[in-house]
Length: 305
Image 1 (tube, rainbow, N blue to C red):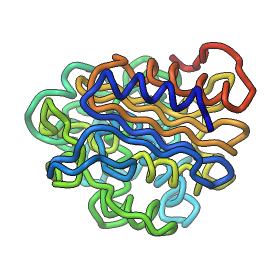
Image 2: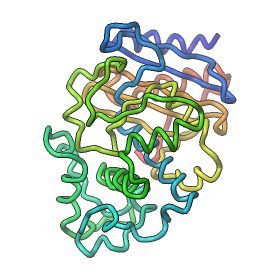
Image 3: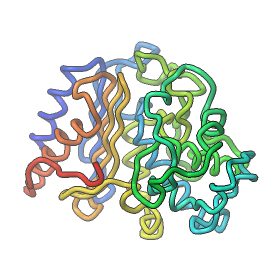
């Protein structure tokens, strides 16, 4: 069953200290595999939390969507910076959460600085919004700052830490547990992140979640049409197979994709650097599942890139 997907996982598992793959179809698990061990020395399963890098943005976006539907925030109204405990340059006063979701808020990119082993999302974001939004406001320009800000917004409107908000908003409805943040360190049942999670502290809602592929698939299966009205391109990525997000940091890559008009979910995470990026991981697992489904369409061509 699913020979191409199993073969893709075998190759990835052989090349890395640990890997996990969960595939569901019509809400039912059709493949769940893992390799490696957890920090406490047990054999890893597809329910073991792992660093998922920028796939965290899917969780953050889903929480924003749910909070918008509950009337606790409005993605089309100005971001409530004061509620978040921030006092940015006045140029940020009319920036909306929808702009942040779409990477269109004019946020500075400063890509290497996100991985400095100091301070946290709030402290670092404060330095990024001291000046007005940059000239690319209104155009997709990928920046972790957008989702760091959204994570702080979630914490402000729920009055709970980001991981607890994720648990209650996203996992509790289908009876799962185990999501947590890199800022809390790693737990014995996690699959280890070799470079050390402290280097991810600044990312917040942009990339600090540890979550299993089983739970990622469960979250994606729980999304509603109303959620999808907010989780739109270019905040999420599209290709000829469907949509999702990728994640890439040194030592961990991840891919989550919705296929067949959301009937099929593919969630894959690697502890290691082979392949080198989440996009490369998607290039392996998505066409493999497409082959198993009888819908091959070549190497994924994603937008935005």
